[in-house]
Image 1 (cartoon, chains in turn green, purple):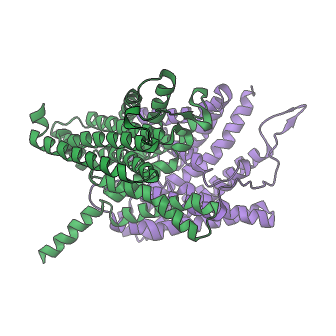
Image 2 (image 1 turned 135 degrees about the vertical axis):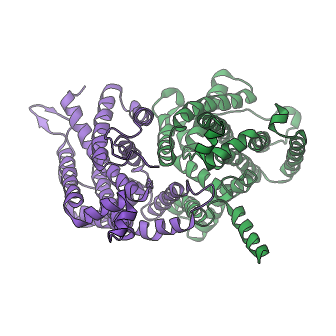
Length: 333
Length: 298
């Protein structure tokens, strides 16, 4: 199996890189304030969520506008597990991954038959409807949502180990692990197969690829990632509620993915940083404009959407592609 | 428990509004091959324009007129300044297929934010010319109100006007021709690009009416039309996304079905069953219930 996937050396090198990255994060995490740690945890969460979009849209070519809905599924699964069963933290995250993957597999079976606009509309319907469902069922806690309490950091870390740092550690660890796994999958036979389906599904089928089966697999894996991201989001907020997974979250994720280059996995961290930076920038601007409640609520959405439009018109395949093209032109002359 | 006839009537009234949005979506889809997710956003701006006129002049129909004009102008503007630019740039690479969808989504986001910045997230209500309270028969009051009657009548008039435009006028012929066979239409002297912009304007105007009708029944806020968009899309898919008749039939069917579900299972089941209907149609009748000659081309 290993030789079928790719060379062992490449995987080892990547593993080493991720371990170094994790170590660097550990050092940085000791030196910054709690606000920055919280934002770091947010970046880690967005990184996982964007990776799920890169896998689904960038590689297998299926558009999903419903990432927020699947994140909600993961978040509620984790919160319900930890609240009702008092399980360890890792088990709650595992449940988030499993439940959302199952959800994604069912959805993917329907989605694999749909082309562009049908799939986009169906997933948009999900993004509008699923968070609202929480209002309808008592055990989901309604508008207030349910608590998601992972407890205090273990005592062996010392008494000055803050809750924010604990969240940052968990989020970063999960992000590193999931990006490592995702990058290996995308570099493997599966990644190439998805690219073949996206480029020309008929030709791919003729080459012996089960296009539908592979699309469902992509949807399942992508949902697993989104569900994990949703659980991390819930943990950071200590709460899962419909308001935590609004339609604008799905919009923001699509924006982040397009901004970073929809088929580039290394870009997702950049996209995640931008998504976390936008509300900060919006706050600064809003402060300059007199700090009214109207401006602070709606300005981030405006910035996100304008960025999305600009990038989809001028750099639809990510800024990397445009830079490459410019360099290519220069060297040709 | 309402009687079956009341449930059907309420369903028809809701379905009539869905029909307008799904008609707008189908019009744009046929001419441009884009499901315009910004349709709800465009309708929202038009409705806020209508709201301003209604609250100043207190004349409902004047407000509707302004909403139609605003919706049409916005629709034409979106096609002329936005879609044309988009189709010039995003033509190749892995994102080309998804670019139009994502772009209309971005537009929806911009509109929601701008509307929020101008009018804030407060709930508004447009006063309709007739009562929102149900008719009283004998001693019982039924949920079906004069406003529902007004909605159904208005939508009927709109549908008649639209079908006259499409069947009896040169403009309608040009619209149909450039949707079904753009190249042949061009050879026959139809200015397809301009015709497309007019199509977007008509869709925008219809959206404006839909927004006004919905917002005189329920509250208006920057997010209030999201669900209308989803139901309009589901209705359009039931009708096959290609056919205007299909869009209307699909919408009325969806309205009645959801009204029945609401009556039997309560509000919690409405969205779930709408979604279920969408999935079932997509899986078992992907060309819609009104078979079009070509089927879907995307």
